[in-house]
Image (cartoon, rainbow, N blue to C red; front, side):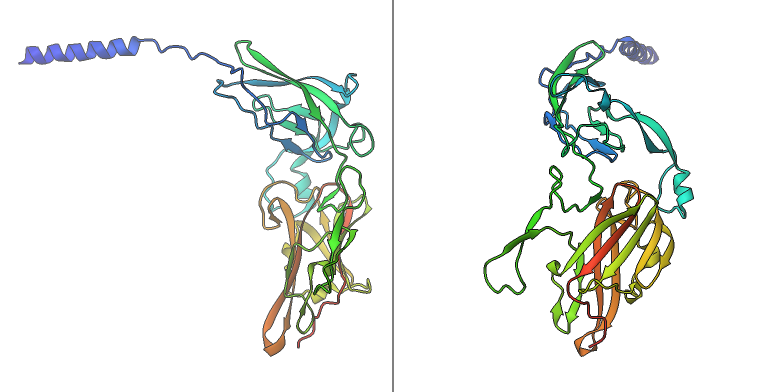
Length: 352
């Protein structure tokens, strides 16, 4: 019995040793002839850190793959060295959390570096644009902004596929969003306007204005709610510092005292510092861009800064109503910026 047991044990060990010594077939690297990009035309807005996902389809090709920009040129075929010229930008060297308590703490986590204006991620094929001035780039609306370039996709065996004549149509900086101008012509956009309640079916075309993102319980009479067209938001750059100011105007363009919005969480309104409140504005020291990153914080919503202004009043029947208005926005260009809320009907602050 022991002899048979030992025999079987030896057979099992021999089979295991044989299996362990058997060589695994080498993985064959493969580049499919049907690899593709979702588009051959890219239309980025310059002046901001921008990652353009090219949605590359590998079609069962084996990774790693290498992506390389080649033959960057203007529409007339001449070289375009400005696309890969080194530019000075701020880069994070520490982790931004949204909990920083001063401009100095934020700036300590950033440093100025030099990077090429336009690059490609070598492992994914996504396009990257640095947050630098478009002064040297031929971008709409000022000039003919068509560029051409090629993308070479290859693997470690030397197999490759060239995607020639990719089109790059960059646009000049958009300093803030929402933006009420056409990004190509920089002429005012238009919108249809109709009185409320409608007095007829005819509407008129007027210049587009930035509207409130949030509007709740905003009364201008005892029973009349503020309609979207009755308020507009203006963005104004007044200097080259690092500040963000909020102003509020009534129907006669006179200042509304921010103190009237007494339910506002002023210390959590924006990621800003050293708040100053006067009878006509609220001002913060602020780092740019706003928001600083795509990180979700208590100051953001959907990738944009979110501000809410609130005030209480007693409505008809002594019901407590909390009036709320706000805006989701981004500002990409550093400076001293003002965001002005202009009400075309005077808000009702007093109790009914």
